[in-house]
Image 1 (tube, one colour):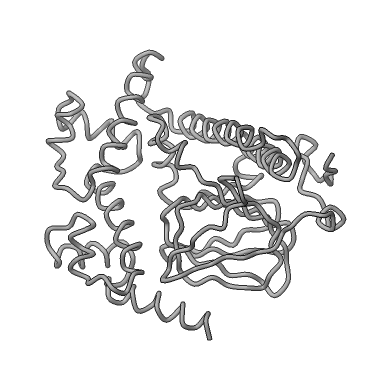
Image 2 (image 1 turned 90 degrees about the vertical axis):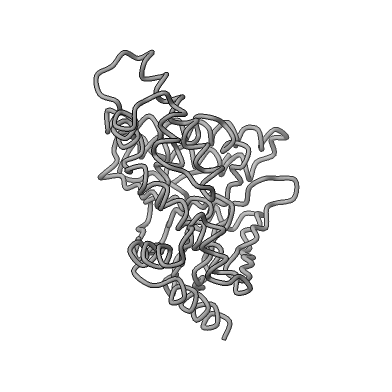
Length: 321
């Protein structure tokens, strides 16, 4: 049984101290990043990897297909994404969604738990599209700001860690069920906060949620094609005006902004591959015009696609030297 160190909140059993980490568990960190893409070294026979990292090693801008969750236990840990700096303090939780380009900066000393979770099976569920709209950027949970959801998420992460390092032959299934519970918790928290769709009946809200989950999934699968507000609205049976209003309530994005965000996110990933031309990146990401691509990319990222590629290359070279 894993002992935990009690801290300020009696409802939370916090991650334990050094005595626990000296147990016969392998927390070795072997992160492999090539051309900006991290190939996650999952534990043999598992779809996940969890370890305690105490290395003062930085990671240049990169992306991976796993959901990364970082929980510092001693000293800060910094993540930079889209020019936003997340300085995560001990006991805070940072979720970095799959496919999102980010940089990690470690302090000279410190420790943090890192969770790399393969959520590909979960992401195929119809209702998961709503979760991915919440994860359009890193999700940063702090006890003092997210009281109603923080303790539940923290305790779920503890259970996931315990299952991972335990002897339960059904650990992967147990972890999957805990992940599902965590996503439901996050989704319900944000839906309650935002009161999406206003004052309508529960059955009608359920109908709208199913419809917009399906819509987001369709956009995610077809973003590189020519999608218009009119064609997507027609798929839902709503007028363009009504669809736009509901879409904004559900995602906090205008339709065109969401489509642009999804395309730029794909472009970020492709730009980290030096063998692909800027024009091919634009086309593969769904932009029909290189000038439009350059303008929107600079608008969102603060630099041109070429500049972004140079920065990523420079960061990688600096790390390798």
